[in-house]
Amino acid sequence: MKAQLFAAAVAASLIAMPALATDRIAYGSTAIESVHYTYAVSAAKAINDVAGDKMNVTVIATGGAVDNLARLHRGQIQMGLGTFETVYQAYRGIDKFEGKAQPKLRSLWVHSLAIQPYIVRADSGVKQLSELTGKKFTAGQRGSATENMVQQILAAMDVKPDYYVATLSDAVEAVRNNRSIGYVKAGSGLGLDGTTLELKTLIPINVLSFSPAQVKTVQDRFPFVTFVTTKPGDIEGVGAVTMPIQSIGEFAYSDTLSDAQVETVLNGIFKGQAIQGAAFPEIKNMDIAESTMKGTLVPLHRGAVAFYKKRGVTVPDHLIPPEAK
Image 1 (cartoon, rainbow, N blue to C red):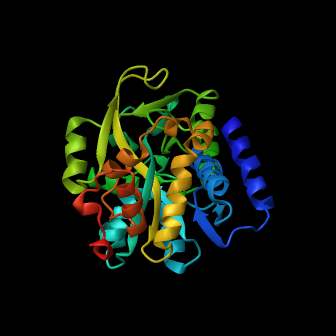
Image 2 (image 1 turned 90 degrees about the vertical axis):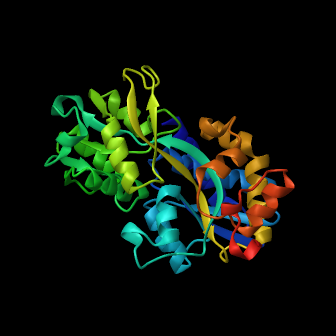
């Protein structure tokens, strides 16, 4: 709740800022209830504080990565936030993006390596993922990358829930009122998202785990999906759980931001890391460059390649875009 209040206050201050910047950048984020919206607001503040004479970044609440990809394609935003598993599929034009490849997609930075917990009411009787078949369950907030990826993962395992399609707030309320048994919501690092922590204070919940066979099934179908196994106590009151882990970060097209604009954005992110850490603790001590090199398969923006190289970072060949070669 404190983080959400921080986001609201900072967002209000951003709106109230005088128009000093020559470049106005629309930054598509996610639902206001999400901790990643809070992060986006803090990232915009960091950029504006460091480079307010050059740039004014405005955060727009959206439906998440899939929505941001569509908005980017329509020219409504210049950069967006989302899971790189989904951004990679859009870049390659595979699975739900078949025939709709977006080859101009470019990575900027990764701000989170977050668990993707499958949450259910403890009184639902569901203890295994296979038992979700036929049950009301939200794969992720409507239009989000989480929703898209979870539906693909469950389909690969031949698990067929009766999907309850909803916004994040409606999905949580449906679980609280027992109209749905659960949902998936990306966490923060190895911790649960704030909305799930709040729900956990109201009703008992369980976190479902993937078996080794299920992990193999998913990775045979989607080799870019990675898993993590938490230790007992990593999530308070929860034992060891194996679940997907998402790389969440920012992306643009090769031509929605210039090289100079990207360097300005990243300069603000790196110099303003403390500002972001105050709202989103996971990034406080993160090596952003290392997380970015490891967390995406989508080539970097040419301006990002230049920025990282100036910092002495080794950029892998597969992350250098054609226009930078």
